[in-house]
Amino acid sequence: MYKEYKISCVIPCYNEEEGIKETLRIMPSYIDEVIVVDNNSIDRTDEIAKEMGAKVMFEKKKGYGISCKRGFLKAEGEIIVVLDGDGTYPRSEIAKLVDFMLENALDFISGCRFPLKNRKSMCRRNIIGNEILTFFFCFLYRYKIKDSQSGMWVFKKSLLSKLRLLSNGMPFSEEIKIEALKKGKFGECHIGYYERTGKTKLYPFKDGIKNLVFLFTKKFIGG
Image 1 (cartoon, rainbow, N blue to C red):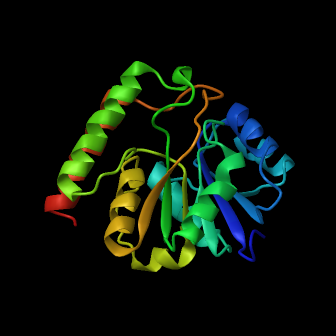
Image 2: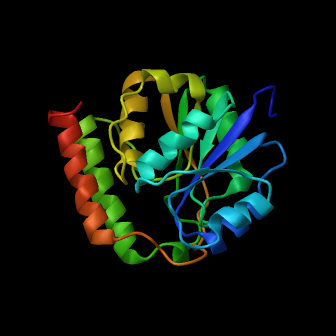
């Protein structure tokens, strides 16, 4: 527990046998449960996660969003942490995000990667893609967010019942932020970001277009 709160960490994974080992190796001791959602991997992601003490759930339907939601259903903690299983997000800074959330009476904290502490942790193409998506996020939803695509969040589990989460794919990351700022008390806190371990699963142009289209669809059709 951390400050009398039970903490659950949900990690959606697809073929992250290299990254998940690094991610779980330095997981803070105050995390009460780690839930790895194996999204139909064909490598040893599930075996390694189990060997390192994580609870493993399987989700056959492909998608980042559906994997996150699957993990939320299993999470028992009053506070949920979400991060990727590729070693890019700072597990050591979970306490900082929880503190920031509690001290400011917030419901949802998104870890902001920018400005990058390590310039080599993200290629220029991805930086530009993030800037474009974040610009449209701010424009459409009238909120000055700095990192709309961050995959590390800390939030109160009680907030979930208020959110209308429709995406099962990559746009889920921006959707949960949209819902949280509309229906809860939302904030950002700067975090570190590291070079990934293992091969990337991101298709920058394809996924970027999907995320951009989703921002408009959510705003004008599905909001």
